[in-house]
Image 1 (cartoon, rainbow, N blue to C red):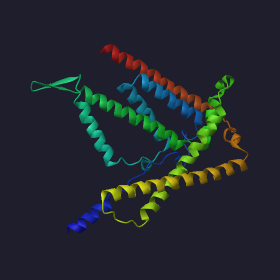
Image 2: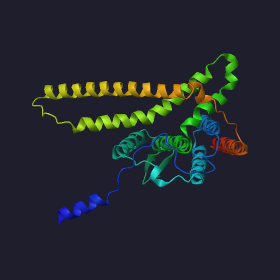
Image 3: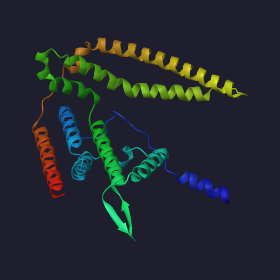
Length: 283
């Protein structure tokens, strides 16, 4: 009876959702149709805002903005990766350690003053990190990788009179973004194939350490070989399509929706700065 209950509970568990990077969510939406340069400017502006004003008001407004954008982009819940247990444990340990630091505010309970400053600071930093990760995920879920290089080339155009190699940097970033998901798949296949190989059970600690070292060297050698082979194939494909200049050739312009998005983000940022200033002044 216990075995059947355990099997039923195991089947009822939801599978872990993996982290999917640089793969846009299928479909179209107002967020999908925005220019990639607009999204990069929004991420840059919000990052600067949270750097200088990392208060609760700013974090709340940015979180609301990201939530509205996710609703407009129709991001499904399945796109959000599962949080592993070790991360919850790490957050709990970090929260307990930060709470020991104390600090204001202080809450008196039965004559004992409990200091919540460290715990609140830890919660604020955690919320800030989650908001920034969600912001980057929104760009990944709604932007095609091929649109990033032309957007960077357009945004970096004012730097060309200074002889800054904007196009070369954009091409290098585009190649890296395109190769990253492909190499992750290759490494996962290599790791799975390595685990399927029969292994001898070592009898001593020295033999186990030596086996781990040999496996690590084999995996690194195979990974380097696969990377070079993929780089050669990608180079041939780029040459057949007209060279690296084609990666930044298509440079679209911002539309009315892009200017409206930038205006909304600027208004939210300005409101956050004003509210944060008023909060600090009242304290």
